[in-house]
Every structure is written in C-alpha cells, then in structure tokens.
Length: 242
Picture 1: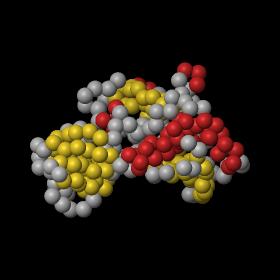
Picture 2: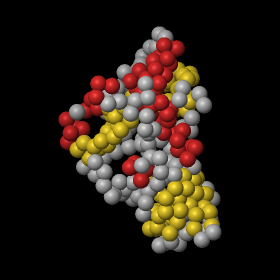
Picture 3: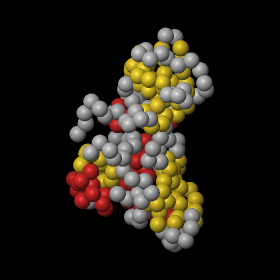
C-alpha cells in the first residue's frame, strides 16, 4: 500500500536520479525538495549523499537528515549558494554508497534470523554493519553462523514490503526485533519488510530503510569481531566481501 505521499526512497529504492522543485531552505543551510530521493538518517542507516544540479551549478550533498514532519533535508558538503526556492533541480544519488547500505541492511535482517535473539542495537555502513544482541555468552561456532547467513543469502529470496496499522503492530509486538529502535510511526501505519514468500518466508519485521530486491544481490558476507559489550550484550560485525 503506497500513495503519493510516500517518499521515492521508499517506493523505488533503485531510483538514482530524479527532478524536483525546491520547497524551502532551513536555517542551518539545508535544502528541502518536493520529491524525497535521498534517504534521511534513521533506524541505524546513514543519510544518503550525492548531488543536486541546476542552471549549470552542481551542489554536493554530504548527508540527509529528517526535517519537520515527513520532510527530508539535504545537507550541503560545505556552505555555499543554494538553489532558490521554486527552482527545478536534478537530484543525483551517490548510488554506490546507497547500494552498499541496501545490501548491508538486508544482510542484517538475515543476521537476526541466524541469531534469533533480541536485538539491542545496530548500525549500517557502506560495506559493513553490526547488530548488538542480548547474548550473555559468545556463540559456540562463529564460522557455522557465517555459513548459515551466506546460505540464506544464496537462496536469492525475494524482499518485499507491505503495510499494517499501528493497532495491528500493537497487537503483534513480536514483530519488533530491535529493542533500542522503535518502528517509524506517526502516519497511522507501519511498513513491514518481508524476506521470502509463502513457505520460503524467513523474516518479517517493521523497517523504514532501504533494501535490495533479492537476497542474492547482497553477495557473500564475512563475520568480523564478536565483541563483548557488557554482561548481557555481544556485538556481531559483518562486512561485504566485495
């Protein structure tokens, strides 16, 4: 279920370039457009970077943050002249960086399947990521977990989304795996990301971030350090092999 209010990063995570109109400037020197191609920092996923072009000028965007309500604010890499309000611009995403975020994000959802413990934190990077688990003792066989994760990836499972109401989520609290980050709310509905279909479904959880279309697109993943983050927590680091 989508509508015209949904940002482009959510309805088409593979869109790399799109025209838009400048709606406003922020006091801090950010730019708000009427079409949100760039993902704003949230849920452990960094804000997108890239460029906006207009009238022969190219403005480098260092990151994107959440603004008022559902607005996304593009943050220039350095203070400079901004496109005027009402101007038409072309947004160009740093696709290589975004795509790595997508691959890592979906891999972390699968990691929560391989290690079915409460998640206490997480972070996504361009090529690497981590989840913190409520795990008093380290896993007995780290290599076996890595192979299990890669077997799930190799199944090339379809990744899709759907929507439920806030009330439906409240009635099914087990859908929320992450204890430290609550699903994005406020619109009366919550987006669910599903990995696999029918009998092949392996994961379903609320998420507002960007993902690949199929798990095979992630490529091979390798485990990094499993760090002790307190009596009850272990941090599992992963990275893309290529």
